[in-house]
Length: 313
Image 1 (cartoon, one colour):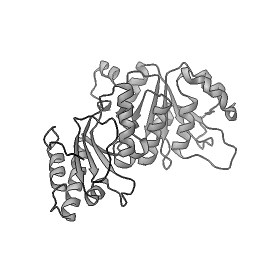
Image 2: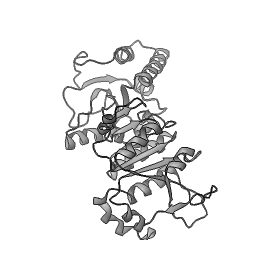
Image 3: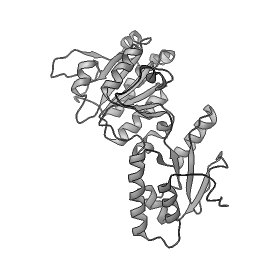
């Protein structure tokens, strides 16, 4: 594979330093570990670079082709003997690395399934908002606000990534991350989302930011909840008839973590809704339950698919 000019594009200083040092032949394992740690710290603070692997790269490239997305791939690090994916833009910088370097950069013990890593800019569809907002700022958070997934303290990156992927698959308009959620661009969340974090609009903020959004777009607030309710709060059951009754109503669906459930404020602000279950389990894994909610409550133009879900009639 022909190497490209190393200075064809501009990158943050810490990223160039990381690439330069990890691709030198005399870089030691200790140096690599320190550099990787330093790179991750800067990425976390600046939130401007994310790492992702080959399958996600292919999905993102396909998304770019279909929707003319402006998602930016800065650089691809590829194993010496690996082939590049088709459809790769010639302007993307490619760096060949050894298996030792790939292992250090990937953050996993085995790289048997990892041929390359893409270094990407955090998309402009991701926003971290504060309470100091102008009223018209909310209009740019989501292109449409009829179906928004709200995650309340989802700390497991696998669950968070899976929920983002499912929301994108069922054409929800975006996701709102309340405090306590993990970073949607950390490595495990990216693998679970299969690139959905680069395609689905995501906003991170507090309830004080979410509430005005819901009011502005007249959204109904639903909170996913187990059928059993020790606080004696009314809990509606998800069914085909319920889904049809809210088909034309803008919705915010709030899902909490398995360990802590919905926060106290979420329970107070939302109509609680649960999935009917005949077994002896109190609740489902949040990504499994979320998949059912997201499918059943998807936008009105997909409601005809409900005919297949006889289980919930």
